[in-house]
Length: 367
Image (cartoon, rainbow, N blue to C red; front, top):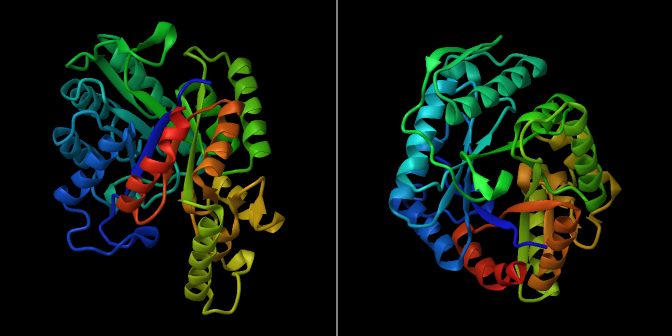
């Protein structure tokens, strides 16, 4: 197996204390965020995901500021097609990619958001994913072609050439060449998987058990072939919380104590939330898949902890890989054996865990 892409998560939040992070003064100042990014460089992480939603700092602005203050840090910038027009985004991304020497990565997000707050309309699932597909198609063309004319259902441009032109660089892609920033994408619905199979470079999964990830990889590969994918083969990534300690006993004690605290906060100490009482009713297919795992048991596979989902954990915080560094590394390698080549890991307090997992876990994943 080759060494996977190893990324972290930088909390792009207005309010402090995200998922149990330390509440510190100026938690989202440039100096604080730079400290995170430089710590990632120090330990050899490739970079970090910067999350997006309305009401959070603009991801492209944060990514640009951090890129200026770092040398190798690669921002995985989450963006929404409803927030950006394709040509505007393609131009901004080409500029940042040029100024950073090719460090930009892009995570295209189509999940529900308060789009009306910035002048868009939510639309149903079919509308959102059809628009996302056009967005990705057009952005890729603007990065690789000149004088692009495109007429779609959602977007159009006439004689459009984005400058500066993106320079091909060594990296992932056909013939070992990176032609443009990689497009990462998530989503577990049928509509989302059709977009991923044809347009994404990397499909990101939440922390499902091995069998679920294997089934999805097989389905996406078949779907890509059936739909006539025109790009390099689709790659796969895992976004998950990793609770790593010196020993397995210490890791599980800490994880269980945190879940007990979540239970007390979310349900007043009265036990787990019922399924229809959990946060975010009507959540996405991928999130529902994670919440359903808790019905199968608190621990799946060797060390996939599902209990956080019972008490309000969401997204990457719904399931945790728990254990000593060798145990968590072994679990991640099993995902890698299935075809996962990118890991986006995190735990809180974020800065403390950058150092801890950078020292304990990363060397094992590079071995």
